[in-house]
View 1 (cartoon, helix red, strand yellow):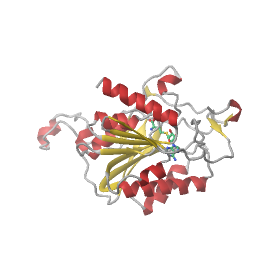
View 2: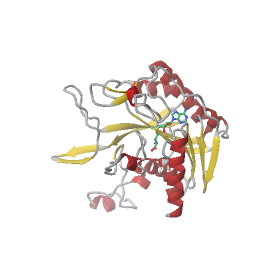
View 3: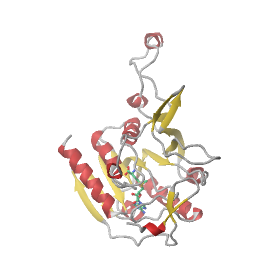
Length: 293
Ligand SMILES: C[S@@+](CC[C@H](N)C(=O)[O-])C[C@H]1O[C@@H](n2cnc3c(N)ncnc32)[C@H](O)[C@@H]1O
């Protein structure tokens, strides 16, 4: 674990690590297979080189955001240019393994003091991919007087609480057909169904997805990992892409949430993480899911 004295707080309450060492030494690659899924401990750039070109249907991933989260081994505060260069190389690796009709869902956000980063990144990726959809992952929202969901409060006179993140849907052609109704919502006004000749009581959900975190009381319930996403997020991405038995890759697997989603959606997951303890958590979660389908 990171020693406590390496932790600081910025003026908005989030803690970060200020270490001059940018990267941990690259660990040897280890591979585990569980059910239909493959889990790798290793650097995603190296591991992706081992995967066949155009072999992946869907990538769903949440890379380190470079905002100073406290990961076990990875140092989440690189120089901005270095981070952007690195993420561009990762995206090149993803482009190589993604099928021409594949979908790459990139979940990312900035911080109050580093708000440009996700936008800088997505502009860089313009030379590699088309931005087919931009989905807002809404973690908390207030409708009228009613608030739902959870967020990390920002203690500041100038910044608002950050209640949403980005999911950039990147494709190679910009024209990948999607199964919109696989994540559709029922019509509010049922008379629309007959009037407009719809076969189903479902319409496209649109590009704002309210996906709250479960309420947790203890860090252990978040698997001692600082940056997980709820399983509904990768499940919805895989469903929206809409092919059956998809190969689903997460090059920054963390605790294996995307692999669990792949399992639940009938896919074959490939997960990669640098940190052996996170790979261990992912393996345990996947074993438990396979024991209790
Ligand atoms: C935001 S977390 C992903 C969390 C994941 N979505 C979940 O639900 O558990 C990013 C992960 O990237 C991993 N990571 C950082 N650099 C890496 C690299 N070069 N290759 C593979 N994984 C890396 C970190 O260890 C961390 O677990």
